Length: 278
Image 1 (cartoon, rainbow, N blue to C red):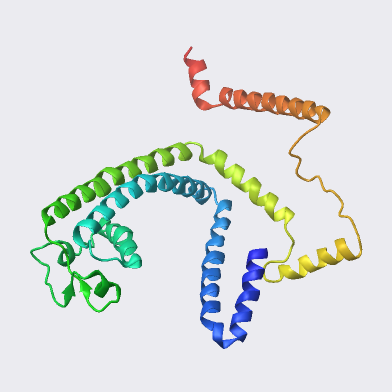
Image 2 (tube, rainbow, N blue to C red; image 1 turned 180 degrees about the vertical axis):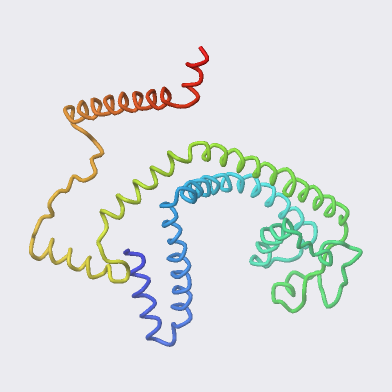
């Protein structure tokens, strides 16, 4: 709530002042994306979609560990190719762009052969002078001395990233899916309980009208000094007497369920035919 309220005030401030309109519009776009993604929380009610949210959350952890492996290979390949192809370029933003961004795009098939393959490189208005490159008077020339090594590194990088690491990620996803799907009913019940608990503990009004509820609570607590009554609708810890009563109730319900199951089995047609045949 605090983040949303602060973002709303920030956007209104930038909207009222034309000089900062673009930054306010950017923040508003990000707020829309975040609050729209917040609607995924509603899917916890559904028995089929609820466990899928757990699966997606655990898969995000798998992706996080996968990025460690990918990051090591990406930095190793990016720094090496940058040093081989453009050793005279001293522009820090462009170095970071080619070290991280270009190898990342190559994973998805965007391979700029006109920049890394000597047979397709066309030198036009380029220079090896670091000062001229830094002043952006001319573009840096590509070094073609060890171009064969660059192509070999490209093949190895794509082989490891697209085949080895990608299949490792798929295997991790398969394990996570099978692990959660086998206990989907337990996960869904836990999600439903947390959703009910959250619904019970929050104010009745929805955003942005929830501000009225918060102002009412502020007036009630800090101005009128009215203490809220402790509600015990959800007990996370039971006393010893309540725990014994709960265990007794569970035992009685278990026996009743087993008796009902035995009676249903005894009265079934299959059981009657079996007794008749004997």
